[in-house]
Image 1 (cartoon, rainbow, N blue to C red):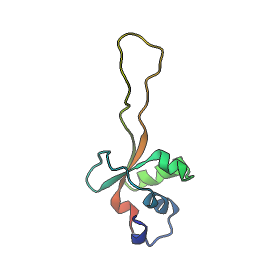
Image 2 (image 1 turned 180 degrees about the vertical axis):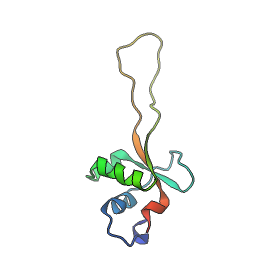
Image 3 (image 1 turned 90 degrees about the vertical axis):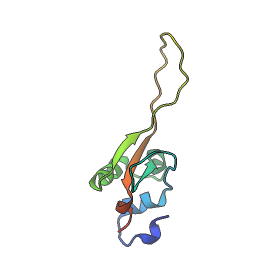
Image 4 (image 1 turned 45 degrees about the vertical axis):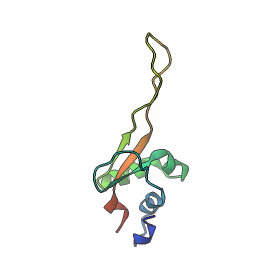
Length: 94
């Protein structure tokens, strides 16, 4: 991925650069989307990753939930979308 372009010893940058971006979620120009569950599967500290992303001009966002709808009152909780990081591409290269 972007690892070949990196020349720094930044473990969070390296981790994020090794995760394939999510191709079907909109992001601003020159930004990529990295799903939070992929970062978690890689064993990262999610609080530290979020702090790093925010320090580099990115943010945490959430997909719109997808669920069947039906009329009436139900006790079933509404689903939540999946969280993801919106990361400026230049933050992943040095």
